Every structure is written in structure tokens, then in C-alpha cells.
Image (cartoon, rainbow, N blue to C red; front, side, top):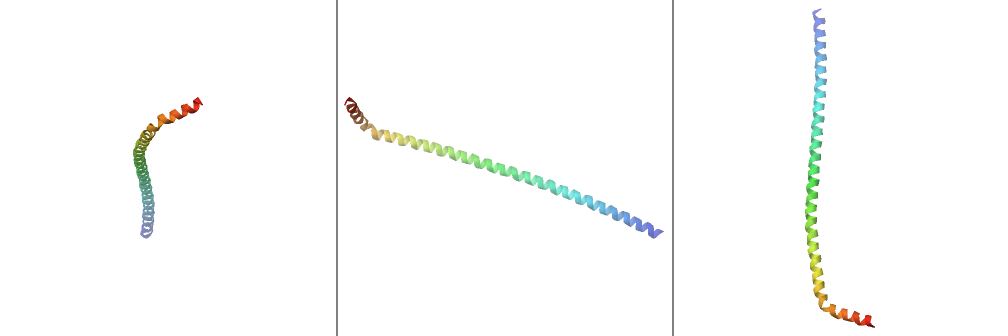
Length: 101
């Protein structure tokens, strides 16, 4: 009788250990899933930050390049005007003569 009681107690204890192991495994799996989600969220934030920084850098560089090209274009126009300014009156006179026929 005592042996049967010990066996039943051992079976009950084994069942409790199995249940506790299952609960612990489930808890660890849940913690792992939460850590994974947090890491993914953090990686996504870092990715967005890197993209935003790259976009801001590209925008700044683009503005500098636009300004540089604008200045160069203005300089080229000014040089062209200076180059053709002396020839303008003669060309206008030739056009007027042609029109007068």
C-alpha cells in the first residue's frame, strides 16, 4: 500500500514537472518572440533613420550643386553678353540695311 502511494506521488510529481517544463518552454518561447519583435522594430527604426539621413545629405548636396550650376550658368551668360556686345550694333545695322532692301 505504501509502495502504491509512493508510485502515485511520484507520478503526480512527474506530471507536475512535465507541466512546469511545458509552461517554462512556452514562457521562453514567448520571451524569444518578444525579443525578436523588439529587435525587428529597432532594426526598422535604424533603417528609416539611415534612409532619412541619406536623403537629407543628398538634398543638401543637390542644393549645393544647383547653386553651383546656377552661378556657372549666370557666369557663362555674362561672358557671352560681354563677348557679343561689341558685335551687336554692327549686326543690327546689317539687319536694318537688309530690311530697307
